[in-house]
Length: 77
Image 1: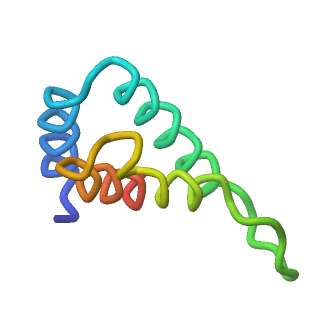
Image 2: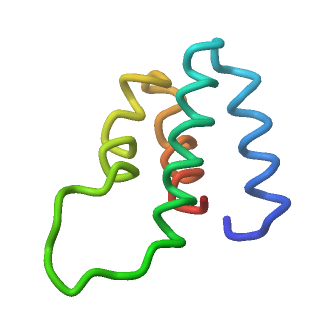
């Protein structure tokens, strides 16, 4: 699943199954992941990236049935 149309389709299906708070969380988490991708790499280790924390909390925020789909979207943000 790497095509743009597949990712858009996945997001649409996921948003249909999520409640308002989970959809808001997903919007914020994918925005943070996309912003992180634009940052230059650091030579030294730093604090855990925000998108990695969001990746870990996807199950709690979106529920176990939707967690993997949310994580795929974060990886493709």
